Image 1 (spheres, protein in one colour):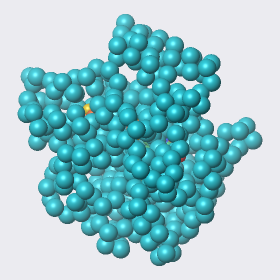
Image 2 (cartoon, protein in one colour):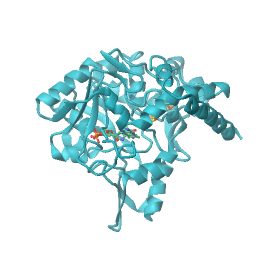
Image 3 (tube, protein in one colour):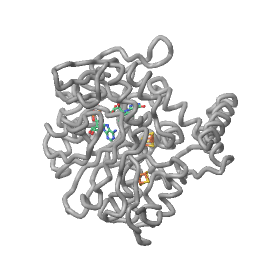
Image 4 (cartoon, protein in one colour):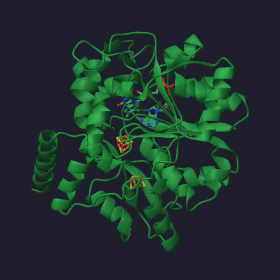
Length: 406
Ligand SMILES: Cc1cc2nc3c(=O)[nH]c(=O)nc-3n(C[C@H](O)[C@H](O)[C@H](O)COP(=O)(O)OP(=O)(O)OC[C@H]3O[C@@H](n4cnc5c(N)ncnc54)[C@H](O)[C@@H]3O)c2cc1C
Ligand code: SF4
Ligand code: SF4
């Protein structure tokens, strides 16, 4: 039997505001567990009552309820967030650069932090060996283990699913997660002092949205493979952007271009919360990385296969120190980039940010719950939207919400 529902969880789930971060499960002493629901999203299920302190912790930290505000920094952009330095770069170790999703910057920063003694281990996600299109939480203590998790994995991930247990172990760890995961951990720090004491660095990346497992299954179907036959699956990486690659038990290997796997399959399966995401650029991380795509002839980025190049934004003093240390140690090669260049690399991120406000107004009109999202420049970004695209998105979101209720 299901226990009485936490008011915060009930509201978040009713509004389709859950990102699947796992924090509620990870801080509820077993009362809440993550499960997979159709069409393949990670969602919490409450199995036991929770007490007031747990409810308060979830209300403060759940990114479906409250999104962490951007931090103070010397510069700030309504799309690209707070920043100290805006750079492009890549890991100098060719193996890391190749394995990484873009230039291997995230993995290299984590490897450097570990080897320089800044953290004892790394909490991140990797492929589930049982179901290789899916993700599991993992602890890495070596460069090889960090590299085994490199590459973007466009499927549900709940890296905070065991966060209370991790914090109670008393050893420091670097955290890598989606922007909403980092938001949740930052907000948890406001009510749990162990976070600041034990998590010296939080790394994130730009996030175009999290697809359901149906997205990966569609790719496999298109490749002519049964999901049960797959023993290894990479969404991308091993090159930039690298191919979506599946290996099966009988030795078959099938591939698909990133443009096709993301454009034709995965992007169609993104959860609703991502469409109103006010900080998909990792604005609350110490460092956020992304693809430093080169512009294509169409005005949109080109996905031509090249040596990996990451966009790197340092967002806090700690981030500045870590980057400086990695560059001085010869681990990363970087170049300065004017912030306005990101508009050309990331047009989809820019578009979504300026339309978040229109979509939130649609939620308000249809009496749908919305997360609190102060201090994230949502209004400033919306002033860059044309009246036409604003109204189109307002009406489109109203229509979608009403259709979903039928
Ligand atoms: C769902 C998703 C959407 C993305 N959308 C964009 C986008 O719109 N624009 C853009 O520029 N970049 C996007 N990226 C990020 C981009 O693909 C690269 O991850 C980023 O450029 C960092 O590359 P890297 O080579 O430095 O990282 P790597 O060295 O490859 O390290 C990647 C790290 O991210 C972690 N990770 C991978 N998948 C997940 C996941 N699902 N949840 C939590 N942690 C994960 C891994 O554990 C690994 O530690 C997205 C990534 C994901 C997972
Ligand atoms: S967003 Fe995270 S904390 Fe909020 S309900 Fe979903 S899994 Fe729980
Ligand atoms: S788009 Fe936002 S809410 Fe969705 S997974 Fe990415 S960071 Fe989380």
